[in-house]
Image 1: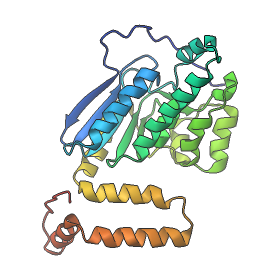
Image 2: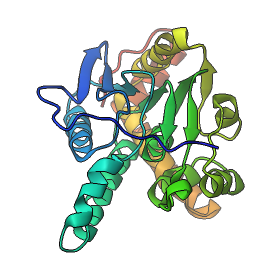
Image 3: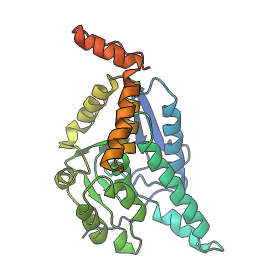
Image 4: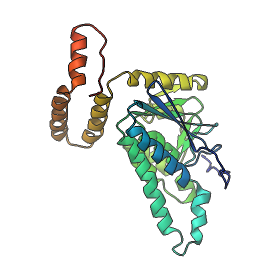
Amino acid sequence: MAEILKIKTPDDLGDAVLVQQKLDGGVLRLVLNNPPANTLSEAMLAAMKGALEAAESDSAVRVIIIAANGHLFCAGHDLKELSTHREDPDRGRAYFDELMEKCATVMQAIVNHPKPVIAEVNGLATAAGCQLVASADLAIASEDATFCTPGVHIGLFCSTPMVALSRNVARKHAMEMLLTGEAITPSHAREIGLINRVVPVEYLQKITLQYARNIASKSSHTLKVGKQAFYQQIDMNLADAYAHTATVMAENMMAQDAKEGIGAFLEDRKPEWSDE
C-alpha cells in the first residue's frame, strides 16, 4: 500500500531559493528546491507562478523543463501547512479555497503556457505532484520514479489532481489510481499515457534535455499556435475540432515562419526562424 509521506520541511526556509532557474540555449530549467519532499506549499506555488509568468514574456525561453532536487519529485501539498489553518475561525475553509485556487492557477498556467513544458521526474510524484506531471505537455521519468494519487488513505480525495490525470489517461486507469491510492511504476505510467518515456536515472537529465533542445530548434510561433490548438480541440466534438483546426492551420499558413519553413524544405536548406 502506498504510504502518505510525513513531510519534514523546515518551518523557516531562510534565503533558500524555492525554484532554481537556469536558461541555456533556449531551454529554461525550473527546479523545485525544497527537499526532501518539494511540497507545493503556498510559497512554492507563488515561486512557480512567478517563474512561469516571467518565462511567458521572455523571448529567450523556448522550452521549459520542470525538475526537482533530491530523491523525490514532489509530494503534493504541504499537509502540515494545511493543518495549521484548522484553528482559523472558519476552520480553514477560506484558506483551503484560496490555496486550491492558487494550485489550479499554476497547473493551468502550464497547460496554457505558450512554451512547451516537460516534466523531468525522478522519485515519487504523489497527489498534486502527480498532477504537476500530468499537467506538463511531456514527461520523462527515471526508473526510480513512482506515481500515485493517495488522498483516499487520509480521507482527502485527490479531486484537483483528478482533473489533470483524467485528461491524460483512460477513465478506468484514472479511477484505479484515485480509488486505490496505490503507487504505479514508471513502466505502467508509460503504458497508460501518464508519461512519455522511462530512462535509467543516470540518463534522465540528458534525455530530457535532448527532447527540449529538439523542440527548441523549432519556430516558437509555430509551437505556440500548435500547443494552444491542441488543448482547444481536445474536448470538442469531431466536426467542431476539424472546423477549429482548419481555421488555425489556414492562419498558421499566413505566418512568416510557415513561409520560411516551407521554402526551406522545397529548397533543401535549414530554415531560419523569425518566430513570427
